[in-house]
Length: 566
Image (tube, rainbow, N blue to C red; front, side, top):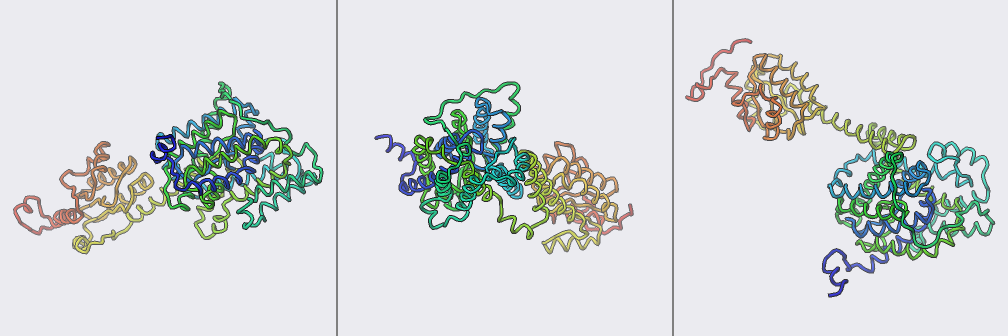
């Protein structure tokens, strides 16, 4: 048995769609070529570093990843962060690519620890906000280059500040080829895009035009290193450890989110289901190798993945084929790429930034809740003017608090209701027969959490002061409980006992019982007054209201006695 037969039988590679995978990889590689060069130039590491980043990340993420049709490589979000790292570390390769290697190792660790499912829990307004913010940053960084100028300092704020001066004093030859490039990527017909992608057409048309109009050499990429990439030994010093670790964490998390979002897109198009933790491991291996060879980091690339799928790519072979196409272009390309104008790449990147902005949500935002729009706008602003990790962190915290508030309001409103929800007619009849002397607390659906604890305790304390003689705490629809809610339950039960009310419990599962017992929060909940069914608790409470003692009930008496006022 030869190696090919062994690999085929292992099931790791599926050669059933080999022709489609090769065509998908070829098309995706052609699309990726100008983007890789543009992203490399925008990152500060150089266009060839972008090309090798697409090769390494694309190949190894496909080989070890968990999304068959995904194509990986440099993406807008990753480049925005990497460019900041490159500038802050003064372009020192040993330090810059140490952050990339560490980011890759963190992604592998995230996959091993099975954190993939948690990354997908980032709320959509947060994702929309930081993706749109990244699109704005990419556009802001390229506007001056479109007019033939370079921002004097790295960063979004200096780039924004440089725009008025660049617009006022344009370098006309650069602006001409830049606008030609920009117009090409925006207006390139879809029918032609099947054979020649718009970005590649813009690269070729803009570069050829620049040669005819005699664009000055200083406005082009200039000399580019040729040959294979050299090994870059990472180095972390005490002075740079903090910024390297911070950058690695941001790159790892951002790359994970970017990749898994693209995996979801691929799933929806192919009808398959990706393996998120395995995808993180594949992305981590790709970024680790890229960092070791001085290439820029990457992630799952949505546009290239969509192109791959539409061209017939279905399995990991397509992503690997995309990298092989780029390798074929990388070695002879360096000499030709020296003539590519900065303004042409700027035009291509402006279109990339435009596509990253979440226009579909922005157009419909007025139809949704104001809170979601405000959260999206806040995250967008923080992404542009502060930094990405702060934006995502604050966005996730605010979204989580808003969700907790919504659940808490539901539970508090249910607790305020004088007539609790009871769907069963017999249970309703039993409660009504008590003539208001039984108070039923329905904690509503969902986990009883800290968000509702304080207000629940307050509202129930007020209701306990009423003329009811028995209190039933109904946990039927409560699956879990936290410390704050456990203390609130303790307060409610003890207040009722101190007011002379009989306390009954129904529907409490074993997990809630263990939590309350472990915190000693159940000392006011009688062990003999706990019932699995609400009906049992209602009948027991009615016995108390009607003055039927346990002994009388046990021997079959049903003597009605007047109750004493308390």
